Image (cartoon, rainbow, N blue to C red; front, side, top):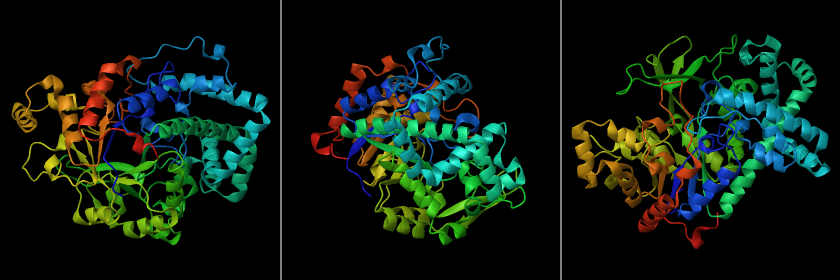
Length: 506
């Protein structure tokens, strides 16, 4: 689906300023939306919103459909009467530049437990009814998720396939016994989701009413240790005895890695999914459309063919390509949900059949300016080679910041960049690339906030292949200055991407 000429900012909510050590859905989130509006933007792109597991990656969540309770604003819970101001006294002092996830968990989760206790004791009849209605309408994923999280808690966070066999394999009598035994804990995890969707829905409504649309992100694979794999094992390639992935996801060896990438997620059993009319996937798209307006599909090529590596391998070298029924799936998705606003992440080694699948459904692909230099004029990331139906980025969450990327170029390569841009001032390299993105024919231009702020490598969000030190970057409130807003607005207007009254309907 081609989109109108617009622009926006890539920023995950964990990066907001806040006094709780991590960005949340409180006041600073609304102030960021105001900055988007005042600078003429129309899009806000985020990373997956799910509750994170190992290494805090939003791409390794305990659920493909739940929200991350660490994003809940304690100040909003005070406004609702479930926390008191004194509950926030004596908070530890956190770094304003990065998230210390372990420390945040130690401080924030007891606050959320207290809010749940007060909700149970003091919630009004209307609030109780809203909670009950939420649990009913989301039961198709919420029941399994809440039980899964409660079970992980009482099992000391152990992976589900190490639980007692009857529980790991979801024997009905065993499940019923644990549901009764953990009814309080299950209700607690449901409450966290109720509050998350309440806070997020209010923020989304605020954004939409001001002409801002939110681009969400679907990671094609889900974590093995997740409610999804535990509750729907038949749609994943698992070892029937151990529950471990029988076939693991990854990418084959290439120019960047002689051993490829071994992600470890279980790949899908697409034959079984097709027998079930892709029911789980349809529900997943329905759920994400509850809280975003557009959807970016990460690793889109996996819907055409995916690299599968057998259990026991330690690298991705000995994998094989396996076909996926992407055409059949997207046709069914269109029939059930209508033509969806999807962006295809088509970076990496993309074959003609993947491009054909993308183009058949008119999904815009992605262009990254950091990939545009250092080769010939046929480079597809050079702006004069763009189709209109694409989204251009200076970089993504997986790239270095533009300033960091430029500073690491060899002299010859940096001169080539300057020659193409027609500029010579390294101090303005981030604005030069933003201008290049905005002036291109690409229908959409998305810029990471780090590039708008002109930050170096220390502000990088993620370094693929490195488990530690990622996902923590935050900005400070004072960073979004009037001068910055005006400069961005001027550029947005100059290149025909500005928010106008005619675009306020979403």
